[in-house]
Each structure stands twice: as structure tokens, then as C-alpha cells.
Amino acid sequence: MLGNWRGVFAAPGITAAQRDALVNAVKSATESPAWKESLAKYGWEPVFLGGDAYKAFVEEDTKRITGILESLGLRK
Image (cartoon, rainbow, N blue to C red; front, side, top):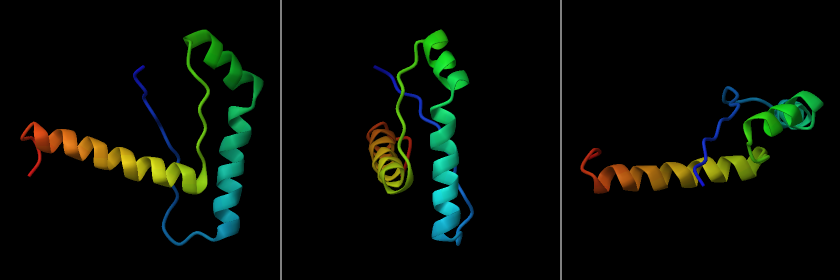
């Protein structure tokens, strides 16, 4: 399976309440009928990571991709 992830990022220094509101807004959008219709239409798998889980995923994926680029001689 090939994944193509996307994310919503905020400016540094937002408050915990602002962060939680942003995570909750995106989470709510992923639960909407319109989003569920898009999932079915395009055959997408529903995956949601928010907050610290998403941060950890991005950091790990960045390390993985950096390793691939280095092994190919595309990154020094």
C-alpha cells in the first residue's frame, strides 16, 4: 500500500487550547458525511492522527525519507 499523507500545521507558540481546537476541527471534518463520501468515492483508507501522534509520525517519516535519499546519494 502506498500512502500519501497530508497535514495541518500551526504557527509556533500557539496555546494548548488553540492546538486542541485545531485538532478537534480536523477530527470533526474527518467524521463528516462529505469526507466519508470522498473516502468511498476514491477508495481511500480512513486514517487520522492528531496532536502528538501526528508529530511522532511526521518525525519518523522524515527520518525514513532522509535515509532513503542518503542511500541514493541525493542528500549529503
